[in-house]
Length: 98
Image 1 (cartoon, rainbow, N blue to C red):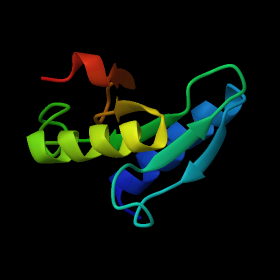
Image 2: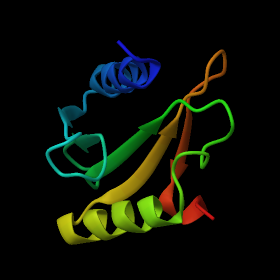
Image 3: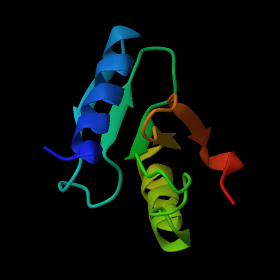
Image 4: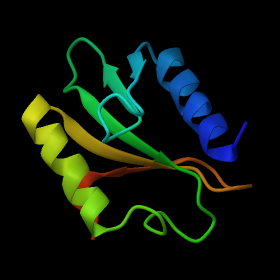
């Protein structure tokens, strides 16, 4: 299994521990890896990246625009969960993206 899939599972596990309902969306939506739902919170469309070269190394402008558009269409917030090797998970909301 690849590091990316492992990280996706790790993020899903963390969200579930915080009582989010998490649905794997990779492949089915074409945009985003996880959909996270929790009563009282805005739904989240989450892209998970584990790149060592920075959060946007493989999450370029076109991918960011696509995730933003999908989140807007679905009434969600777009989030990047960047978790590089040997470093902690960093949650980056859409508003902080370049």
